[in-house]
Length: 295
Image (cartoon, rainbow, N blue to C red; front, top):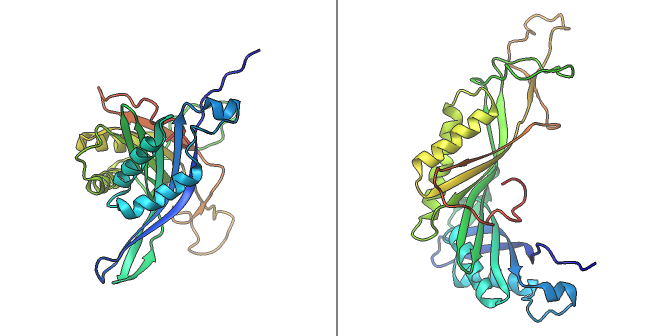
């Protein structure tokens, strides 16, 4: 029976690219984790070992570092577009180049001194094709919490259901979000990212939640309503459960169950994933292909 090569790609993963701008005594830093991959007509490499069409992964690595200098990093989206286009030009057998980037933020403590910021990580996935280019901007590890204005009740129950209904609970998640742009030219990537992030946070804080699903839909809708350059947004949201500590077995004055002391449980956890799409938005094509997880 004849076999056929299916979906495949190859590249260099997790290049730690740090760019210091030294044009003035006040330095700037961009700290990236860059992964590149090429997809295309590489059947000979798999079937016969012929590497004539293969641009080495080491070359992809070198290009990622070289473009940090030659092109610069005004934003991770702009850098990803330039890098992806270069890789596609350099490899005629490829029909698509994808660049996945995480950016780690540093806060300034002097002209040439910085402290690494914890928390959320800015992301971008740039897919450059021969006929179409798609940019997914995003954020990961965005940990948010509402200490009230959240409930979960009226859910389906069967003989294995033990979860009590809650009319006032903590809602917390470590959010991953990626949003797809309708165009890739003429966008102020940094301003767009900041505006989307602000909308996500304001909507999370201002929405009474009957379920995490409802909150995600409200957040996604608010982004699409406020940013016409966004076609869709996808979320992956683990429910970071907080369980009220039961003090009923203690006979201690003042030790009462007032909804103030909780156990933060890290696993198992509910995982809520959702996509909100603008009506009439152009399809994503294979832009999400090989992007880890639902997002």
